Every structure is written in structure tokens, then in C-alpha cells.
Image (cartoon, rainbow, N blue to C red; front, side, top):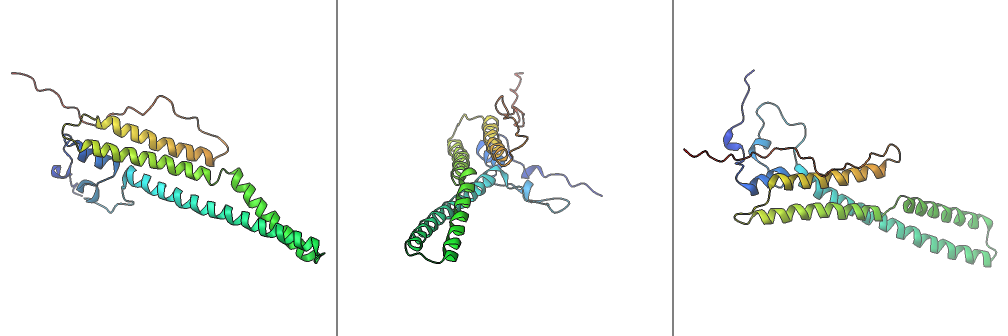
Length: 203
């Protein structure tokens, strides 16, 4: 078996900050990620930015769905209450009163569950958190479009990763009522990945 090495021409030069930032956040891709030398990729490497955008849209759709569901349940409760009042005043059949009472109980149970779960406000909060990350990435990208931008790419990527992991951790802790993980302290993980330019020694 012959090992195919990576073509150096498909790698990103570290001095191109904008291209490096886009590649590391997943805004743009590079041939080194899309072209495989040996086997097909099991799953696409879409990057943080794409995941954040998808999560924001998903949270927004779910927020709208549960908002509509709550309004529908409240509307049904109003109609059922009016029907029960009319049936009681007219001495209506007990079977109808029982049926409407059961419907009203079901609607009350659904509303209690949703409110107890923090829905839909919790989803709106997640949508806002994902949007904050997306806007942060997009603003840093615009700033890197300026010639001579002094942003530290490694620091910015670590901030984005920390924001991303923070939202994921918050969602996981909310879903799990047992064995809640303690929040990580100390700021972003200071792992080094960006190559450092060494000053040339004077002859």
C-alpha cells in the first residue's frame, strides 16, 4: 500500500489570516479537506460556522412550533370553557360535559408540561446564543478583510470554540436532570495550533 502525501499547494499559507480564519471556522473549505487520498470520508467536515447556522435555524423553527402549539392549546381551552358554561346553563348531557372536561384537562396538562420545561422561551434563548456566535464570527471575518489587521487568529478561534462549547454544554445540562457537569472555568483552552514566525537572524 502506497501512502499518498498531502500536496503542499493545497494547504493554506499561515500569513493569509482571512483564508486561515475562514478555513478554521468552516466558512470556506480547502482542497485538503474535500480531496481524500485513500478512502471516502464517513461524514463531511462542515466546521463550526455551518453547525452554528444550522443550530440557530433549528432552534428558531422549534420556537415557532411550540409558540403556535401553546396558542392553540390556550384557544382550545377558551372554547372548551365557553362550551362547558353553555352546557351547564342549559343542563346539557353529562357525556358532553365529561368529554369537554377531559379535553380541557389534556390541554392544561400540555401547557403545564411546556411551561415546566421552559418552552418556548428556552428555545428562543438558544437561538439568540447561536446567533451571537454567528455574528461574532461574521464580524471577525469582516475585520480580517482589512489590510494589516492585527487580530490574533489563534485567540479568535479559541474564543469562538469556547463560545460554541459553552452553548453546547448549557443545552446538555438542561436536557439532563442528573449528573450535571460543572461548568468549565479558566477561559478558553490555550492549545497552540497557529505557526509562529521566527525572526530571521541577522548575518
